[in-house]
Image 1 (cartoon, rainbow over the protein chains, first blue to last red):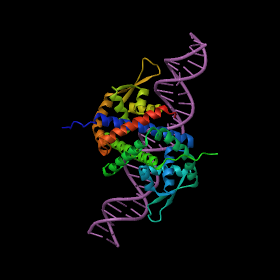
Image 2 (image 1 turned 30 degrees about the vertical axis):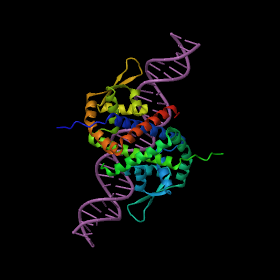
Image 3 (image 1 turned 30 degrees about the horizontal axis):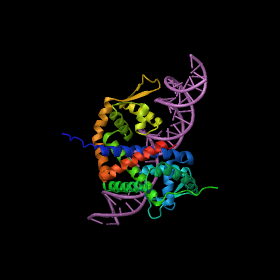
Image 4 (image 1 turned 90 degrees about the horizontal axis):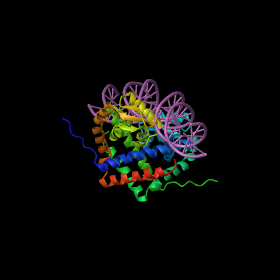
Amino acid sequence: MKETPRWLDPEQQAAWDGFIRMQEKLIGRLSRRVQTDSKMSAADYIVLAKLTEAGGRLRFLELANLVEWEKSRMSHQVTRMTKRGLVAREDCPDDGRGAFIVATPAGYAAIEAAAPLHVEHVRRLFIDALTPKELSTLAQISNRVLDHMEKQPD
Amino acid sequence: MKETPRWLDPEQQAAWDGFIRMQEKLIGRLSRRVQTDSKMSAADYIVLAKLTEAGGRLRFLELANLVEWEKSRMSHQVTRMTKRGLVAREDCPDDGRGAFIVATPAGYAAIEAAAPLHVEHVRRLFIDALTPKELSTLAQISNRVLDHMEKQPD
DNA sequence: GACGAATAGGTGAGTTGTCAACAATTTCGT
DNA sequence: ACGAAATTGTTGACAACTCACCTATTCGTC
């Protein structure tokens, strides 16, 4: 015999639906902007951003973790970016299985060129819509959800 | 001569990074769950959910708007879902260009089967991490950002 | 009522993402 | 020190998404 499902109450439903819509629209618009004004994909952008923020050199899985991607996605992405000359793979002396991903000079040049405009769009579409208080609440919410998920099974 | 870019301040940066990470991780996990426990894709799920919530019959672009997708994405999606027997296209008597998308009985059966488990995961991974107050703030934030984006150019 | 612009939607080619299986280490228990 | 299990990363086949362009209709206006 089946349980009757515990649906979300109206406030929960509204929060969830709103979040999903907002996220879909915002990410979609920003991705298209990055693509059209920098000629690189949003994926290229975030990978390069995290990589260069971290000093231009990271272990493969550390990089994957920073952007919350699965390793297979990252592996394909790195392959593509390597072909485009944005990053390179190097192998890790300490661990024979490991790999470092390093940003090439062209990679640095590419985010440095793309970043100002991208930040402008983030500000225009997102930051400007919110008060500082709302922003800090959102930061808190995000971290809570992230922490919570780490403790949960898949 | 170029402006020096207006970077985000540390709080804005933290809010933005946190949001992106949270969203990536949460959506990723939920998508995989839907896929593995219902044998349909997350895209199938949300399209069917919105469509059946709306009475099982919507104009093509209305549906696309509800989920904040571009028409091309939705068109391909509908084609795939049609092949899977989840929805059907019907043409619109009032407007010769138009199309209605309707959920088939198999479509209804599919979300009805998938929904309880999905809701459980949404609750477990997301809702449970937050207080009611945080949830309502998030709803407010999402709507603010959505409204704000409507007024902005691409 | 005809003609240009806007709207609704579809399509194909190329890019990106997913899943499952795999190889090559490294780690750990005994 | 030896084998089992875990970790690190890759690959191939396939599914989904994007971009640019295309068709058919409707709308507006003269």
